[in-house]
Image 1 (cartoon, rainbow, N blue to C red):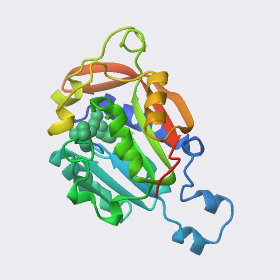
Image 2: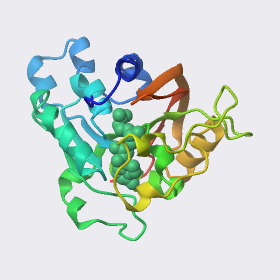
Image 3: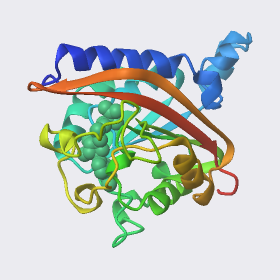
Image 4: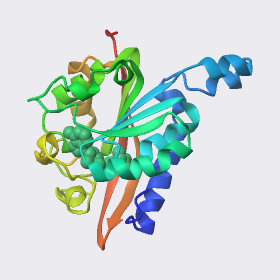
Amino acid sequence: MASAHSNKNEKTTELLVEEIRARLDWIGVDFRDDKAKDGTEEGEVKEKRVRLLDYGCGGGMISRALAPYITQAVGMDVSPHMVHEYNTWSGSIIPQMSAFVGNLLDPADPSPTAFKAEEFWGFDLAVVGLGFHQINETVSGATRLAERLRTGGVLLILDFVVDETTGGDGDGHQHDLGFWKKYGHGSGGGAATKRRKKRGFGELEIKEIFENAGVGKDFGFEVIAKGAVFETAGHSMTADVFMARGTRIYGL
Ligand SMILES: C[S@@+](CC[C@H](N)C(=O)[O-])C[C@H]1O[C@@H](n2cnc3c(N)ncnc32)[C@H](O)[C@@H]1O
């Protein structure tokens, strides 16, 4: 992860990576090593394609967590700096892993030319790791991402838990809205600069977003970390982190 990250942040990243890997069955994608475990011939395993869209990829925590179980990852981020960081390590893990600067969620450009090619469609899994609260239009944002999935593909969102009645987190206080932006996780423009009032979601709210975006099938929600510490340059916050998943019903 980013060299600017503190030890505490690195520990949180490692914890989240572990929690993601502990829930591969729950995520519900036919991951790369599943067949190997069932004793399928090695040749067939190699043929299998599992394609990940890591949206708002940042330095690539999600891609790193899932790298052993996929055959391709496409990272996207509005921040050229984060895309550069992702691309400095990604190719060494699996060859087909690279990130691109872009924004699929800009209402003014719903069909960006840069992402019209086939390689940017039909993903098995699209993940937004800790960045979905930065998106202002959450239903249309989730819809744009769902459109990039194949039928039966999975949208997965990791974000912060907030109390749906107060807008605060589990400890009853509101997160600092500027944390990621201020410390280099949110540079860029367009949709990224418009902020929601709450920095996170409750289960009912995120479920409704999945349903309205056409990815409500087999919806699941789990809190995967309690009191996780995020710290950079002396600024610290704790948060509970959830993971929500849903399957695309209609599509390609
Ligand atoms: C909190 S960081 C998370 C990075 C990474 N997913 C992780 O888990 O470490 C959120 C990222 O989302 C990016 N981002 C915010 N709005 C975006 C948008 N509309 N399109 C693409 N990326 C966006 C930011 O630049 C930032 O890198």
